[in-house]
Structures are given as C-alpha cells and as structure tokens.
Length: 132
Image (cartoon, rainbow, N blue to C red; front, side, top):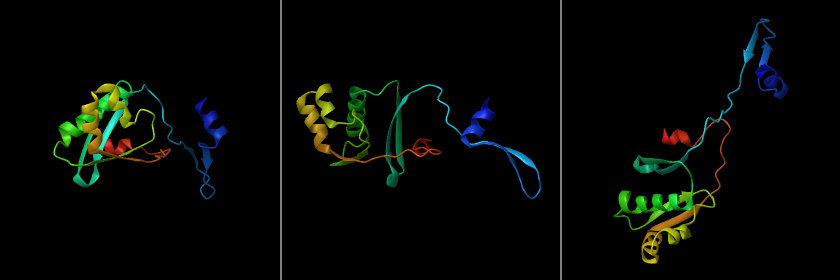
C-alpha cells in the first residue's frame, strides 16, 4: 500500500541504476502526526540562551503568561525586549489586558517591542531544531 502511494506521487519506489542494473528502493521522509502540544519558544541567539515551555493548548491567556514570565523572570533588568513573532491571532499584546490589571498590562507592554514576521516552515526541517 505504501509503495503504491509513493510510486503514484513520484517520491519513492523502485529505481534501477542504468550503469549497474541494480534495483534499489528509495523513500522520502514524511511527517507523521502522533498527537499535538503547544511549544512556546524563547531564544536569544547571540546570548546562547533558549527556553521552551510546553503547554497543552495555545490560548491568549497562555501567551500572556509567557510574556509575563519573559519580562519578570528572565529579563527583569532589561529596558526593552524585542520579540520577533509570527502573525498568529493569539500573539497580540492587547491580550495582556484580558489577563492582568490595566496597570500591570501597561508595565509589560512598555518593556516589549514587537516585530511581526512571516515564517515559512520548510518541508524537511523545522524551527524545533533550535529547541532541541
């Protein structure tokens, strides 16, 4: 069954070497999903620092907890923290007002500078390699 699918898509199957006549079976790597989890990843590449927090889901409140932890635990002395994030609907600093008091939200927002970027995930690689 798997061989038929690979041959139909042209990504695998039996191939014959024209010089030696030897037949070899070729397979392409394909991702298999075995469940889900959410990973919040914080990286400071030039500082050699990274932190990965695993949560069961991705909600606005989960995101706000990560931002508070980043500001208060990991960078309490920083005057400005620059975040480079994808444009996901939960990645909004306005979510802080749903989780914290207006004064606390304002304090966190004043320390965070956000740069949104488009992230294209490669077929045979992943940003998870940085986390590992």
